[in-house]
Length: 294
Length: 235
Image (cartoon, rainbow over all chains, first blue to last red; front, side, top):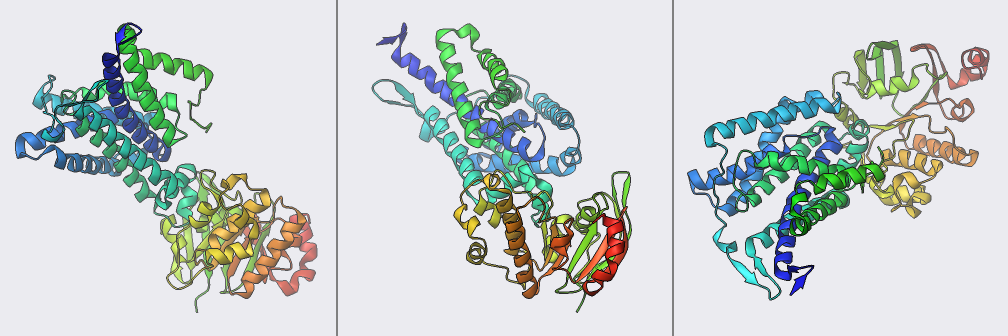
């Protein structure tokens, strides 16, 4: 069966790949948006920390024989700890300054991290095999579903929705939302806002680390894997706007799908289509699709 | 029993601007004290300096006998202080009820009003509990801003211009509320532009000008002080 001259199974396969990429976009842009909202920092290091998550998973397996499943929990925690150290020693001096300083600092951190990993492991990627449990594919009739890719989408969506729930529906999330709006007032009420800021940064980058572990069996674990992704993720954040958590998630998924479809029908455009969408959105709705004028 | 609030030789800056000059004021437990003065006199800055929300500060601020000048802002609330700022600061990303429940409990000893009691005192807020905080009317937002700090167990309330811009009927309700709180033993420091609102409520008055205290007197001396006040406040 064919749609527009493309066999359905191929189309659905690309759609799934688009969803996979979209899941990464969603998780990374979510972390970026949360960090920018509360800390006023454009965390360029997000890509490098995603890469660190993937490398930690690889190193865990390679040097210590630690399985994927354990690293799925441990790597984000380690990335969070690393992020907390960055925040407490370097980032927190920059909050009162222009956004640009946070961007410059985190850009510098990115260069350092990528440089370190590159000097040890070179630029060609390290292979990471799909865990036993998720290997192979399931025949759904209308398409063959690679199990691991389905897992990536399911796990990412679950984490994103859990994050949405905590932020929008719980008391803890209320502190975050209020702190994003008026941190001094929240502090005047007796909430330890500096601690909340640190933990929020840790959580945001933990999301990136988690995405990294999910990505390890799909992509090559390479020091540059973050750089390849981060610019697109920034475009996703700009398109979605910083106003809503659900907005970030939907935008990430949507753009992944658009990219996937473009790859099928007009592959030459697939690398740039996100930026074309970004340009259009900026012209029509400068605050982003789901953004609120600040 | 230590004073609820004792400020001595307080200086405060916003950046390079030296706003408060040698401010001395004290409030006994259970007193209602009003800070009067023209706009820009430094009354709001005094409250903010109390909470560590200004720039550099020098001097002494004792809350229930505890020196607070070196404490970070989030510790000061836990000395039993509730702050209702001039701009009300209702969070737009929270509902009315979320706004109400946001401030954490600040006292190990005092209980604070329960949510049910607060809704009984402010039925409008109960009706609008799931509305977005900033969708409430001005009067309702003011009620919410005060109600927020009544839940926390704070016994020292700092109220900045709560009658500002509100309809007379609401202002009356607020006055009644202050008298109720006073009867329950709350200590209240009010910054007020509206002299007629503050006069029947306060035990003592301070008048500020150019970041300094220039006058202070008790409620009983009010009539005698009217000429001075007329000059200082243009009342």
